[in-house]
Length: 442
Image 1 (cartoon, rainbow, N blue to C red):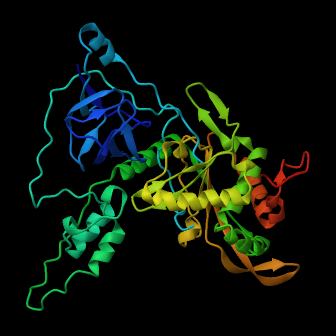
Image 2: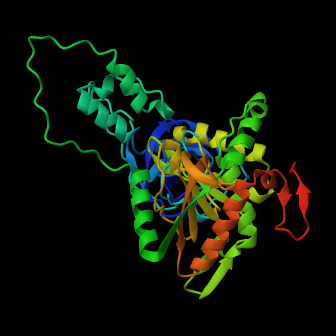
Image 3: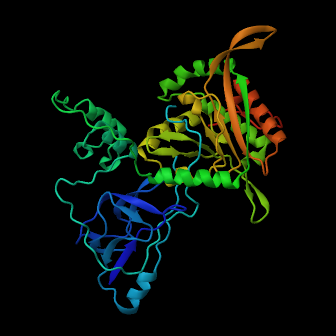
């Protein structure tokens, strides 16, 4: 029998994907679970496995093509399956894969990105489609995988992007590849006329950028945003980080201020669970989350992603710093897994890492709060009756005012700032004063 395997939604709300690499050829035998194709979606770059054993009789699409959800990927010839058995086989859906938990320069954009839902898996389809050969690429018209930023830069510099060797995933051309090529381009002859400058340039929206745009609109349309701004003098925290930095470096871990902020927020969320909740208007209820899972906004070339650190209230500073280092390395390469983009209960964005002071961050809907961390500056502050130079950290926070009142926000922020002013409180697990210190986590 002929079995048409279609591209299905491997996340929540996925509409399309780009073919990065084919793993199979026409006539090749394949087993269930073997990778068929590498696809780039608006969330991750991932391998798509075959749901059946058989022989590849047809491939649909070429590298670089955009495939819509529901479009055919491959046709699989399953020997020995005919008649009623073939009809039954065609109607089967593959079981979802088991979900396995996957364990500052890039942290710094205000906003959100849509994350995958809990039931993300790749079902197959039993509907047949007529076979069609992929179009033959003509010599000299090679289709190149490249980020939108790289394409725009190449066009501005007059560089033929098809001549560039990409160093990104699956040979994708990145901004760094264009910058490196720019210095290798031969100088223009003085006799050649200067090219006419275009009045404007344009580039198509990437899938990740389209998702960000949709999510921004959804957040603003559904959540009633209220923002609060404050600042705190954190000289003791600056000194604590300086003291810990060489010890973390010996373990190969860079510690920024962000792990301290995550720890402070996690401890404060225990006292104010309304900020770790979600509003379900259809059922007219508030859903309080039992786990504290904080999503961290990461600035990558292709757009903003928000990987999640689970159970942050149970993690030490070393564990948090290690995870942040890992995210900063893998997020720009689109190597994050779907599981790492799900399950957030609160968001933090550190725009101060690229020079911002205050902002009005957009809530990562359907969450109810997001905290923004600005740039630490030297400012005059009053201390012990004298004016001295202090290290001041600006804080911005947006909440969904439908269920979070201003008083709760103020009290929550006061507690967060108190922890940041007293970093020794962050070096031990603390249950809010009911039982005292519990000691450093494992």
